[in-house]
Length: 345
Ligand code: DOR
Ligand code: ZN
Image: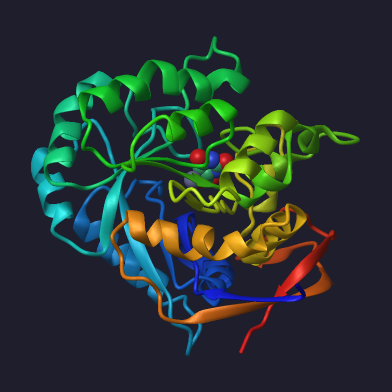
């Protein structure tokens, strides 16, 4: 198969930041995806419906003329989030959920939650008002091995939540381990996971190949090859509980290539093409449409997109960098071949 047409896809987990850089990154996503769920980890965080709708307008302003793109907004759960915030959010169609960042787990997570049991009353309200919980699934204890953080989050934090709130719709974001795959498979339809292109394409060797490669540093970290294989199997299985979320996370070059570089991989420049490559490599191109375009919308109870996109088998070279306000943005796979190309009309 040298060409594939799929329903217009959705990116169910995306960072675009704010301000001048929006015009660098939003066009990449807007030309590939019909909709994206925008993460709220700005500084200060996006915690209210009003803030989210104002942010959504700034994103709209960065969409190229003639392109149709719908940003859907997640709110940031903080220790001061109230039951009323949840009720208000549940009534607004463009607010699709609350994002849980364990405090200190990742970039701009300082405003997050230190004790998950302390927010059980909020989870109860989210269950009652049927608004999804989007989890960054890692424990934050600095003594814990960084490669074990997702597994321990599932065992120690998520399983009790799952048991206590059986009707709460939970998204375990950007899963990285076979334990996360099993957790999803062992539960019902209201427990789902997003999978990034970079966790499908790479394993932890990519961070250390021939030297330290900061543009492959993200959280949760890339894991061993056996975990990568479990993610590929899940993504290409046709199980509707696994769907596309890029977690594309732009940072200026100087913040990545630094003594203490920050976490985040940028994949929005070629996201759907990178996923196509994984599905093709695993003889599963026929499963891409459901994974990229249908299962996420079904979980979030959004209408299915009506448009289509077409990809061709065509090799092109990933740009080495993009402009990013006054700095540069280095994409994942900079300078490497990409084997599929989106038709842009
Ligand atoms: O690598 C990551 N970068 N993981 C996250 O969870 C956040 C993201 C970011 O915002 O840069
Ligand atoms: Zn993210």
